[in-house]
Picture 1 (spheres, helix red, strand yellow):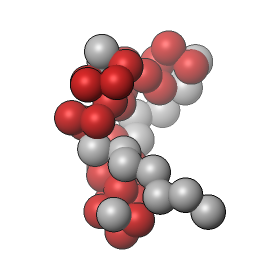
Picture 2: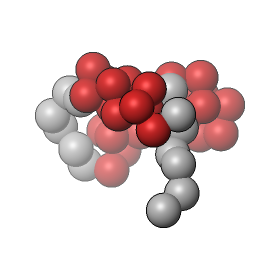
Picture 3: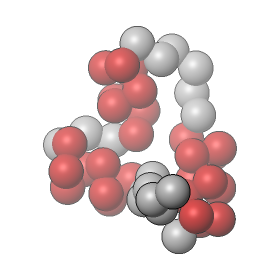
Picture 4: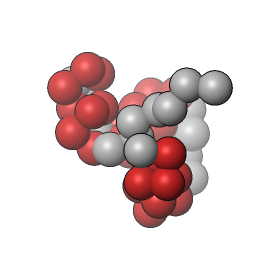
Length: 44
């Protein structure tokens, strides 16, 4: 299983958007930045 970097800067560099913007683009309306940040810290 590959580690996934879910930090804001990763999304901004590679996708040109924040985590919220990326989730919104995918149609995910639930705000999950805190959960994503915690998961990112645990995986990294």
